[in-house]
Image (cartoon, rainbow, N blue to C red):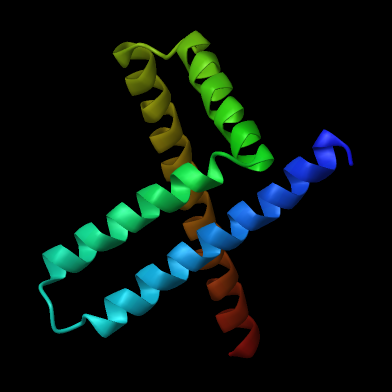
Amino acid sequence: MSEETTANRFDTVKWVVVIALIAVAVVGNSYYSDQSLLYRVLGILAIAAVAGMVALQTAKGVAFWALVKGSRTEIRKVVWPTRQETVQTTMIVVAFVLLVALLLWGLDAFLSWLVSRAIA
């Protein structure tokens, strides 16, 4: 039996545990509905944290975590616009939207006038 087959089998078991934990959280929240909302939320968060840790131990969880780390690295490389650039771009968009709105209003008014003349 290869390591990959063994890992896949254990991954299946881990995913079953994750689903079971989520089911326990949902059923427990319903069962303890007479308890304080704070305690139920804390319980759900604790179970979700455990389920997340188990999920991160699977092959897909490891790949997901690598994606998150890679995304954080890439987001640091982004050159964000300055405040002035953001304001100027926003003003251009607002002006363009107003211009298109006026054109559509004028076209609508003209077509309404044309239809009312054709009917009368």
